[in-house]
Image 1 (tube, rainbow, N blue to C red):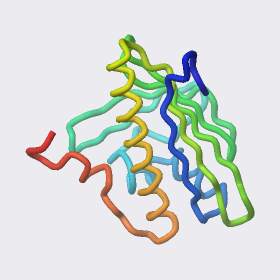
Image 2: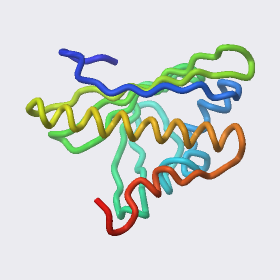
Image 3: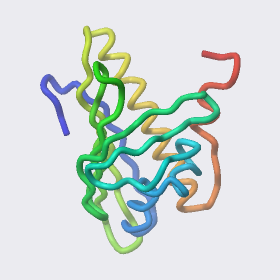
Image 4: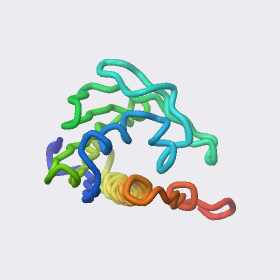
Length: 155
């Protein structure tokens, strides 16, 4: 979902797995925790809230699922009341064993410098998430990309 003035972040990746497996990886915390957050309060459900936790950073947030179209699209809202943004996943099956995933984060607020910082951080973060998902789903490898992005002692 693009917002006014094109203030959005985008990351995309081909994952060589069927669309149903890739979609499930982003809706089921038992799978998502292998490449992104460490735990979730439950599977994503449309019009419901879910809590995601990154234990290594002592951080949790609540996400509200606005759209959940099986094997096609997920749209969530996350962040604080003044800082909330939308994240949209689009799953495009290229054939029975390949799925192209596009993640867009939109709705950034603030001055130009703050928006640029948010877009950069979001693009980097979702690129790591997609790379981790690809490694886990295709090869069952835990790359720990999100865990290792901010090692203790480094900001």
